[in-house]
Length: 67
Image 1 (cartoon, rainbow, N blue to C red):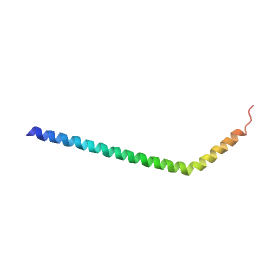
Image 2 (cartoon, rainbow, N blue to C red):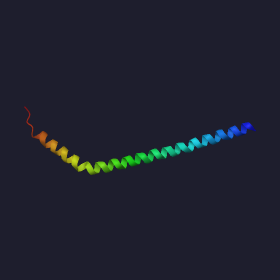
Image 3 (cartoon, helix red, strand yellow):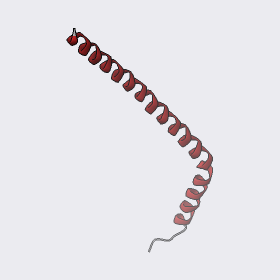
Image 4 (cartoon, one colour):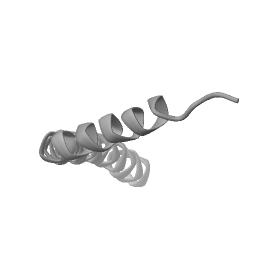
């Protein structure tokens, strides 16, 4: 009788661990999605500024003469 109780507890523990792994995976996926969304938003808002800066650097480098 005691073995059946231990086996049942072990089975229950394994089931709980498996459920928590799925939950953790979902949480990591959700965090990754939010980080990707924020990255796209920041790059979109700063894109014009960075583009203008790179164009200015390119123009300045083009005006330098080679010795």
